[in-house]
Length: 304
Image (spheres, rainbow, N blue to C red):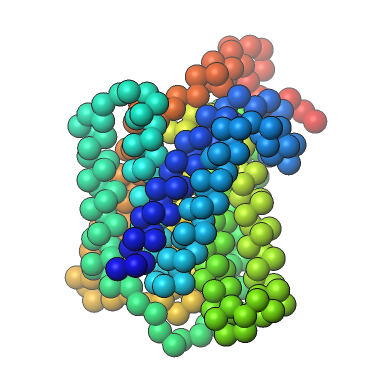
């Protein structure tokens, strides 16, 4: 039961953090997209710092969940951060959910429940070899790089979904390594963690993911970025859990059907909620994007 409590509390803090961060990032200079200068600009904004603090609390709580449960169980729970983001954003917008909002809530929460009930994720003693470990890790990292490269060739207001999906893939890897570091700490203590490459890689993934997320938040409204971020992270995490961390799920035809339906419901629910008008609209950048599209050159990114 503790893993579910930790997972949902983490999702709550993550949802609040994303809403506060996007509200601040939407006002940052667009020239800072995909630059570490963006973080230097945002660190002076109190609301952004509050959002980062909330996200850090969410990450730490999710780490506790990962230590007590399996990645394939925790990741779907973390996807419910969008529900909490909707709740906090609704307080800012004073809009009603309506039928589409409630449909998204039912699909997302029902999909998470269906996947966990059908799959019954559990850990095993199986240890994947180095080749499989790096194959899964490299594939997800490569997908993130490809998404960023494609985004760099698009207009600014078309980048957020791809940048957020890339960040989600990296966050899924971060979650997987967090569980590995938890095992190292249990076996060898703090010294073992400091001597392992996983801990330092977590920091690197966190920093790069943060730049990608803030760039996505800066480039457009939250509804353009949060759905792909929320969908990509659990998918990447589950891939790591099953791919090299020894997680197992039921593979009977009925269980597979329930798992696929559950994951599809999560993805559809995420995108329905992500496009709901309750989420911040980012009108400042939407207006800039529209002006750029009307200007000569069609809003293409300036060279250099």
